[in-house]
Length: 484
Ligand code: ADP
Ligand code: ZN
Ligand code: MG
Image 1: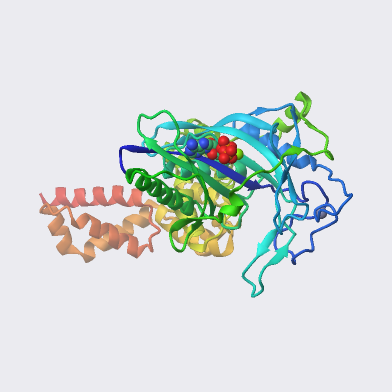
Image 2: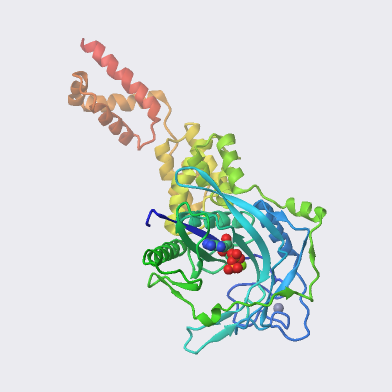
């Protein structure tokens, strides 16, 4: 990107809420049902029906607002947003406009160089989703209204974002908060988290914003980054050629790697908003807000800080362990069995996450219980098995999720700590390898590793390494003294 310019980006994010039923009727929100089966006269927009607000939706909105440092408006109102589209049977969407439920918040992102940056949140409002138009089934267009009336939060950012990377970090943080709150599954690929990006560019030092465009239809974090990079370059090229940026909506085509303008007919936005006459204003009293506050879990940023302070973990570990609420929970359950915080962190960050990534499963599907992993760590720390043997026990736990103590007993893996037994093995190895002993005595330290290897082989890896080292050292010293 031309360093003369800077990008200005604001994101509008739609999050589908994890309620059991829709926002204004009792229909199920279950994903994947047969088309047009989760519908009723209300969400089909029949004349004469009345919407009834789902209380859960308000609770989720307030939770998100509190988690993103917003003011929760005591009174907010629903409004009708009119447009015609085949998957919107009422020809208006019930949304919030002039008086949204949450305003003036921010979230904090951490840039690559470690600096923190606040991104303002203009507003968060509640609204209903439209249905789905399906174009790829060999007919012109099919309509599925199961999604109609699914509750959404629209989260609108201030134009505080300055690069595609910052947009990525902002989205990732929003997703992390939404999933910690357990109010949205955050899946962009499946459309439960959607992002429209507003983009303009300006010369650095300029205080006025340039003309913005809006890019839609990006269904992954990577696509958002790529689409933004594309659009920033396109706008800079226009300005460099002395042309103007036209305010318009563009659609991202991930396969072609370009954003192209939508038909201009859909550009003329006049939604004729007016207050929804069939719904009362939403009143969030202090009491209700405080009740909702009780549902607030520890949020990712503070949990990370606590992990650093309470468990003495490096920031790097804490960041990974708190990346999801479930992973952080898993880690803390290990700590009910062992207080070796750093070992527990190492096991999760290497062995556990490796399996999860390889098998493409979630931590909830991970076969080894945190308690059993804690026991394994304790077996090492109590010198019952070596760290090396533990790496053999772990795959067995993956297969069976048996108690590691049981596996160690069954497979006879208990570490040999009996000094006389180890001494015997050492004597045997030394007498079988006279040549190497000579070499050692003449100063070739490297054969040390050879002896240890032989001893471990003889004991099938079960000899306690520390005892082996100590005894081997004193044996060789003794031989050396004798030969002097
Ligand atoms: P509109 O009326 O076109 O919907 P809004 O003022 O509601 O525009 O803003 C929509 C989004 O666009 C917000 O996220 C806002 O931060 C962002 N935005 C507003 N102006 C600009 C600009 N000049 N460049 C980039 N983003 C902008
Ligand atoms: Zn319904
Ligand atoms: Mg707007």
